[in-house]
Image (tube, rainbow, N blue to C red; front, top):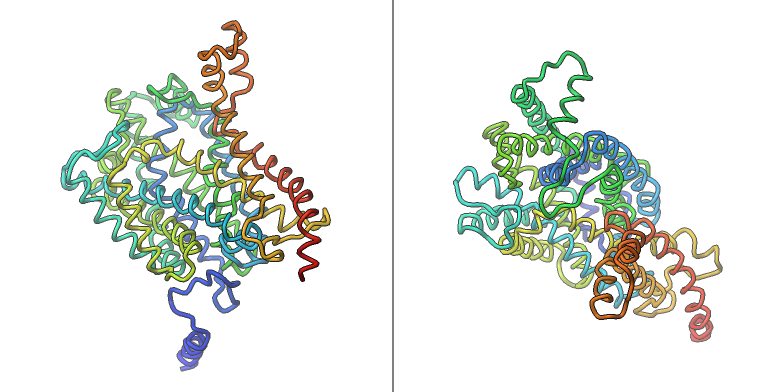
Length: 513
């Protein structure tokens, strides 16, 4: 009876405050009554990161010709850095401000600039959600036997594929529209089972590798020797893929979620946390998902190549069905679902911030429909997921640096934080220029080799072939590495430009006040 009375009191309080089951406090701090315990975040991170992306990303390391040593060590170090980034960069700000990323940015950057950022952020999250829809659709491809897109297919390959994507996408969109609590509950239910199935994939495939290679395993050393010679061999990558080293793996494991932690998108998630240390829950995603699950998924693809080197298609459905039958297919559906849910949710928040008068429920639902259309029409993004995630981190990373500096450092330089809110301006030029300059410089560094070749072709650069090669090798930075120096570049630029900008505008604002 006491439990029922307490529950009714909570409901009555919610009604008085205008709170509904899908209320997400988009433009106000999360109140104490809506904050969540550690278990909610443990389940969400385990479910989100032991999920559909793992079935795509794990195989791509094999496609990039990584060695066993580089793969394992790179994952151990990179995932540790990712957990620390959530704990030290994201969660401390989230539990102090308790605002969504988008509203926090609006206070700093102004409505006009944030609209541009939110559009870019929402589009990126929508595309990733679409990629997860395609992962789940591959399970239906096995069941209904229709042709699925290959590694290099840019367009749909069958009507069955399009229908499967539509069914999966609409199902995921409805779930995501009900908000964070629904997503968290779903992840808590699905995550433990999925972890066991992923582990089963790995063990079954490892047993098949032992049988196929005729290896006698009498010690851990024998198993490791087989991994180095038959699975992650460190040989030539597949056509069109760059060769991966320890540094590629480490930086990718660290930065594949850069938009979430250092880019501070997960302010929107950890604003619900009662304590900042709850961010350690991200380790469940990193070491169960981005370590164990990537290893198991890469085993599936490595075994597929071992049996048939010409079969380079990365289709989670067929690979998992071969390893675990119908259980494998169900896992693929659920894995895509648990990733698509929070991704659509974040995209919905981004778009709803652009249209604050619109219902977040309706905006998230519409976002899911857009993700479904993108997945059905252009499946190639799923097959190039490593490159897409690296581009995403680069585009969104600078605003994470802006928020970090504005929250912790800018007052130490005698400058105003939350400049747009204080000044009443809709565009913070310091933040906008820092973002634009960083993206321009980083893009030029990534594309430096092509820029040099283009200048030489137009006769604007007259160097010997040896000098040209040295120039390209010295100054070109791969996209997996450029975001780290880019973050510091943004931080320095934001402080420097703010000092100039605020010194000119601040007297007029203070006089007007």
